[in-house]
Length: 330
Image 1 (cartoon, one colour):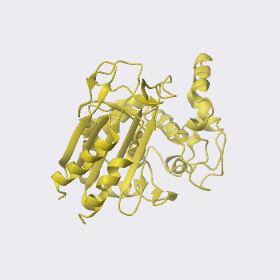
Image 2 (cartoon, one colour):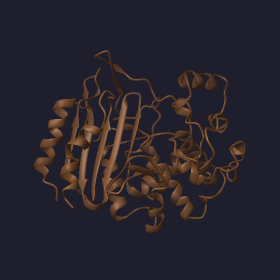
Image 3 (cartoon, helix red, strand yellow):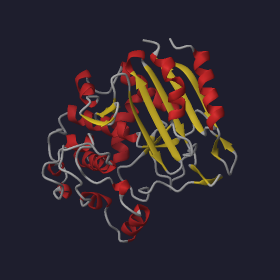
Image 4 (cartoon, helix red, strand yellow):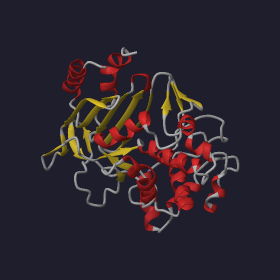
């Protein structure tokens, strides 16, 4: 078992150097080794962050989307080698070689919507014209042939969300709750709509020229439908514990999820919703005012969860401070 006092010392030293705003939780084999909140959920109101504060988790949501897709695959409602248009006729415009596998592994070649120039303006225009985000995504450029290489694309995961809506007959927020969140008792996790009052949700903060600002909402937040989630470090502990002890899918399906299909960047390959390396797996997320990071060390049964509501510091500081301590537990 990791030495709790030494772990706390290393994290607190890192916090003094970087001045975090958010919450951090480290768990080993179900036991909490460290949990602490820092800074303010709202600086302008003087409301402190707590371990129950809800944070926008950005692309950390991809872990949950991938799990929902694998649950539906296990139940025979989806097939990984099937074309998206087989489930959603609106996607007939996509490259004919694209499969669900390509969407989940970031190998589809579909342009990442977050790389569209002036995306906030584009989304405002689309909203004004009463356009469909699904149609917009289906018409994005094809950057390379399916399976040719790896390139991160949130577009693919949004399309998987739309496909799951169609095959289940449920709205995205409801299918995520039915298949993933409720079975794990994750009552403080859900679809994040910043326009709806959500008690306990943190504001995002940005630092510009040394001054603190309230951040803009995510650039796709004006559209209902598949999107990013909010969560707490304590809810994410439930997710992490389940992956080690009682995952929502069979061992064979979980192995498919965590298979290193293609190299992303050293030392990581990408599975479905996870960056996978020989000794750990992880995913992170970032949007205006928020950073999230979850890293698991399977041999040690350790999970490190970080949720921040200020994007002026990266999440690597804590990992760099404590990773040697964790890996020394072989």
